[in-house]
Image (cartoon, rainbow, N blue to C red; front, side, top):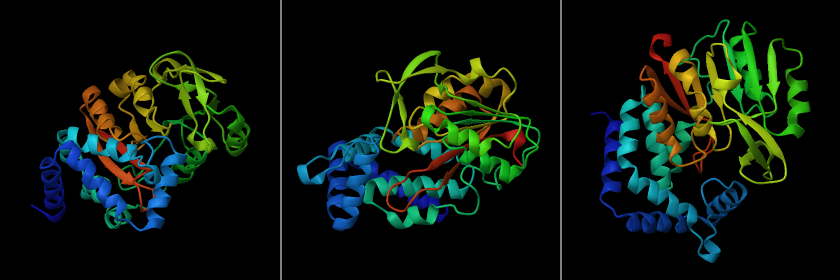
Length: 312
């Protein structure tokens, strides 16, 4: 057994030895032992981005820690399943770094996991080329991921579909991608159903979400309904709606086996739920994790799922 396997096994053993309440108390104690500057950064971050619960220690609010403790306690088996499914030790070490950060605020391992070799999403060690393929960008924002796709793999794509829910950002998106042919930009929410949802605007436009109520209504659809041709690449970063959107792309995943680049950090359970859902639909996938976030808390975690026959 190598060093990373040993670290992960010991971590899971440590988690398994504790009750959910004990896990909560340990994480809380570790958090309160941090320097005040770190505590305040994390408090402000969780207040700004409402994905993981709040953490306002000044008033005894430890919701974010409670949710982490619950996930660690309840989902040990799921994390073991994911660890065993990951194809390389960069991925395995990252999973260890994420869980150890949750438990003991291990910033060192998280920092070591940051991958600056390639563009966000597009790891050339895993997906070295793309030729005459259909690329789908769900969560297009200002077109940064689509531009990266073009810059990494060239302009020999078959077609690009770019979905963005925030109407106000569409002029910027269209301007950034305007010189490139065969790109369809759509102001639609991608979900597991067709209908209407509402725009839940955050302080940061890139973090806008959909909700069941609000002032700005948006049409939602599924990738299976909206795209009739074969799909080769799907990238998703839609602020926690990734699993819903994947459910609406089940036929593409089953029959097309597209390469999948999926953000799995907006909800704690997405880290295992999303690869397990993909595996249930299509057992021909290999799984990798890559990290493009910061040193204090694991955001910008990407699951890369590649069909086995397409792996080089």
